[in-house]
Image (cartoon, rainbow, N blue to C red):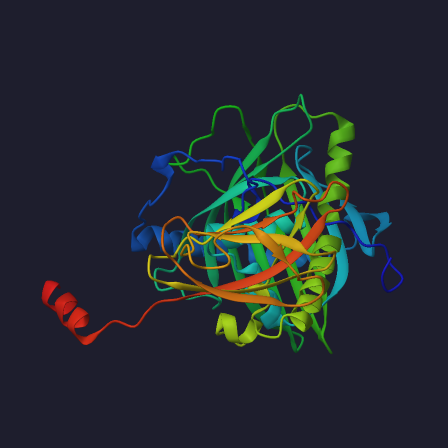
Length: 396
């Protein structure tokens, strides 16, 4: 317990969540035909208009008290079960307070890349297995601006022998001023598109007017309301439905604890602002639980040979073995070695000699204890010489 409430353990690192892989595992692959689909201006406009229309209904549900019955309080989250005319839709609402600001939350919840999408969902939802950011709109979108529109695919696990579920949905993030307060909205709803057909072995579920409402109360407090209306489709035992309902509401508790861990890590990692080159680096502080006798491998997708990779990390539970795949052989980080990072910052910088590049945090030396790593990194691209620039201009 912290601050008089129970904390909820964050999901441990998995091969699919948050873009990292445990050593020796294989990442989930979506069909190649799903990647790189180009949308016309008319199609993007239709997507954005459709998503805009969902915001009022989510705000209404967040304030609705007549059609929800209390289902108790767990880990500081008030849980409500809603009455829905569609018996196939399970309607759940959770309300809690977190520490943060609207800017802080925007940087975390605008998950415009596959890596940030997997990180967000893998941290707060233990049922999430993997996902893909298929597209974002408008064409000129620049992170972390709002409004944001994204097309996402996500896969969720259920206990055997039940089939896993996947969802294809359009999401929208925006900020409004309601009664003088900044209110952030993140809303999603399932869409059916022929270029993303259901996959073998998965049951395609659907969500309806689901998402988060963030009300900035001032003084660093934000009230968060989480609404989920889901039809998992297929056959599910009542026990599994009830378990899923409580787990979804407790996403708020995991979100709150995650924010607190980020704030703790920022106090330990003094160079976070410098490394990330942004005023608010909160979303770029990545944290993962590493179970005993296992490792986490975090790929650096944008790296090129000749780049320099700067990193900084700490661990809340102990020291950890660390290495950088792709680092030049003369670097002390090219081979695994024990990093003294228990509640202190461990920093370094390496030159990229080969691809792929990945940060590897290994807890394989521990037979008993897990680790909880917080890290951030930045790629530095070497400046081009005048002759190289002239050659590139000539080629263009």
